[in-house]
Length: 483
Image (spheres, rainbow, N blue to C red):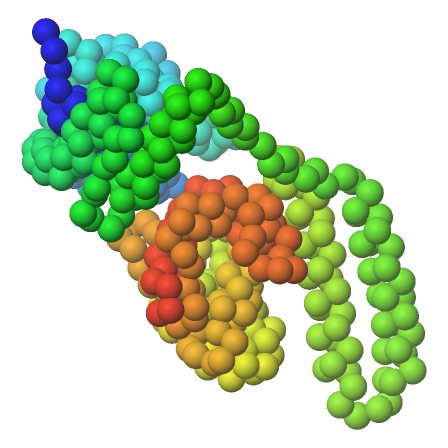
């Protein structure tokens, strides 16, 4: 059966969209399953922590601890909280022989708790194994376990454990409920893909049909065939090329000679940076640092020099860190993760950015509320990444403009850092390449800065997005996990 080009275009475009949606959907399911499992772990741990604190208080009050655990009303209330928490089946306190001392169901006290798989192993499992566990037929019960290490007069020893029961069947229900909007979105995308591809096929196929007819005439031996495309686009250029080839074939046919032209491609090689660069840069830095210390000593009594010397020292230190970070670009990075406020990151780079912005009359505005949650990250690497983006933004505004440094919440667990300028913007065909190592549009650029920024953000489990309109400006949006 013959399939038309238009049908192939529609089918191909739809198949690509379907494949992308399927891959993203599969990844979304796996990732969402992991998120639900970790949220359940957090809730179970909160319940277990409250129970542990209450039992610790009972142990400090003295008396028969087993009897106190069984009869304490406050402890029973905490156990019953598990019944109101998503995906929770029960909460219980058992001794070392798994005999129930307290349970959400009081009638179970004194009986033996049935064994169940450890929920922690599911938390640490791969996304694929988590999905298999969630979709196990009929669901399975697992336990979040917290050992009871108590001092009952003879030193700390294991008294028993706190068990919070979790069922994967409820996890499956929650996951399927969350997937419903995603499935609707996927269906809309596929329907839109069919409609858009049909319209595109109709628009594109007409010039293709004309070109096919011209090729058929050439194939039948006709010479001097010409095509006339009315639209002024790539097809018009293709028509001119076709006409030129047709005229050449006509000449060669007349001369009895038909030649074939060959095309060649050249591959551009990316330069490799040797480790010798470290010595070429660090040796001058060390010499500069020594002489700067000598200068600090000689000008210690001169008013106003200390701050300038300190700025030089800080920038030398930063340059040294940049060199080390660049040389370790392909190596594993030992991140020093700690809570860091977005405002502090901006405050750290603003003096340098302001000095650079002042050269071309760029105004720098900072919008970072002090009540934002801190970011979980390496302060030095994040500051360097933001500084790279801000300096690039200043360079994109040679005639002045506005640079905005913004920090804001994104949901409950992420912080967005935004570097926005009103500069020259980035060409659309360059947007997908700007984070490639060694890609640059500057005459003296190295093509390393944005690649390092991209690597730094993804080392922090973050994401970076860029939007740009040539002539209007560029916005980089960094999304990082909150501490």
